[in-house]
Length: 176
Image (cartoon, rainbow, N blue to C red):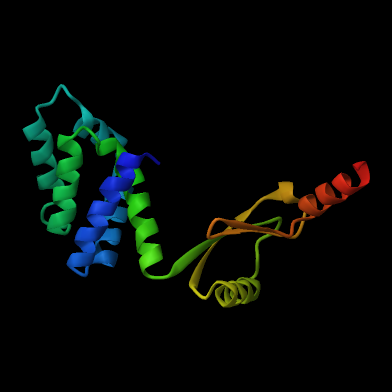
């Protein structure tokens, strides 16, 4: 993520906070990104220097003006005018990090060899919330390279209880 994307994301977040619309703006950004991902040619059109800037900005207004918050649409127009529309995903990522921090939410990225059951997810979530003192959202992925156990990344920390990690620790001890 570039510094510029962080600045744009921060500016939009501050505006959302002023208007008490943090979640609403996040939802709008998610919807717009989903539409951009489904129609990548639209992003190329908005980024194309061969199309006059005012036409590209008007295309944003026609596409989103009636259905999205005014400030989010203005934000898109600004990105388009400044030639940064392709950085929308990075700006949204910066925005979402600020939202998570503001709402005291931590995202835990959990890697396991097999899918965790609902009960296991619930217990892990509860334990992580107790450990961090924050609301925790789990992002679980299956990763056979860890061989067994769990590897969790949360708030910049890694809790690695994977079999692969334990084997590497044993290997280091033995080779000394």
